[in-house]
Length: 450
Image (cartoon, rainbow, N blue to C red; front, side, top):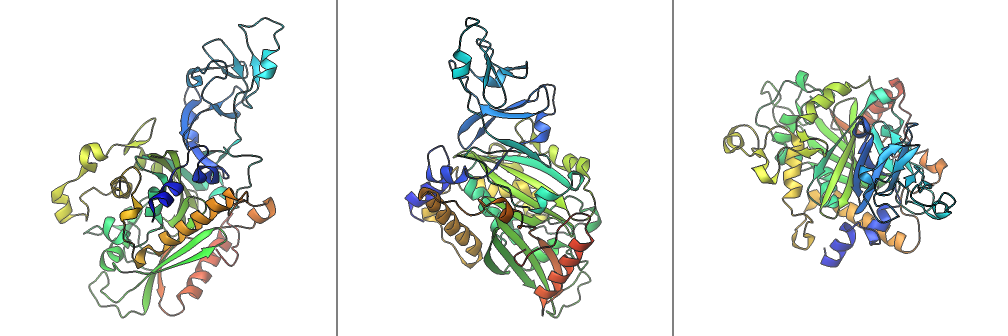
């Protein structure tokens, strides 16, 4: 990739080509739990913009610029009172829509407040994630994806900080080959203890642990196809090694893992037979980003308390910064690397991914990379990204900025991790997932591209 194109696709501040493209979409900006304390206000930086998110006294959300329009004081320490957010400098009060309600230091009959407005942005809350729209005009409709349609007790939301650019953070999630190496474990855990953990459960339709499959089949057959919501990525591993008892397998069964790139900047992957993860990568600025994940079950409700317990010890709050990082070598243990894991970085795959993407530098220099066949989804996404940025530059709508009727027709998609027949594998898994959705209490049937 040329240096100028790398810059064009990675920089997302106001006025940049990719920044203008990204602002055409709703962006995850915070977890609902971040406003659960005694003072429901949090300071944010999103795509280089300094913002304040708060709940007013009626419990309604507001998203506004951080600098007071009077003389630029920091509203992150403002007072939540009198129906809005009041600046501590001179007492100016702003409603959640940015209108100025009070300028108490001015004369009683001053018309100043009617001429002042604080920058404000549409905001909404879905299944534990708060979303903001920082673009022009009316915000688009969100597609009817599972993560947005699931009942609240069938979803769990989490986030994490990465000290790197958003694009390399996303690209690790649309790279199906890396899991056989970066997430390789030399021993298999009991799948019964796999709840809420990635790459621990047995693959659907078998008792073979995912850890064994990834470890023993490091050259998957990868396919990537454009879809109305992004890219469908299929990785197939024909099972011709040995089973859990050491008996030979004849290749009549194939492990199929289907994941998705969901435009603009999410991926969608399986956690277990019923649960999938949709994960967005949102720039803080050009050198850091947050990932936001929604775990969604088409089966029963998820154990939100357990899933949070498994994750909260790995970060520091309130910034959701990983406890392991560059400063402490990501927890690297050379003995573990020789005996237990491929990386020596523990059993949390988020740490593995963090090391991989932060190690590329704060903004990866793509002029120096050498891509292979296993990178076909990454190549496809970069092409789509470039096309979308160019569309916005021409004044056109990019992909998935859709009218309500079209957005409402995009259901799913289905992420899959399972073992079934090598011959007719697509028909087999289509039937399995169609029945699973039919049996679900809430999931809708899929179209042809689910």
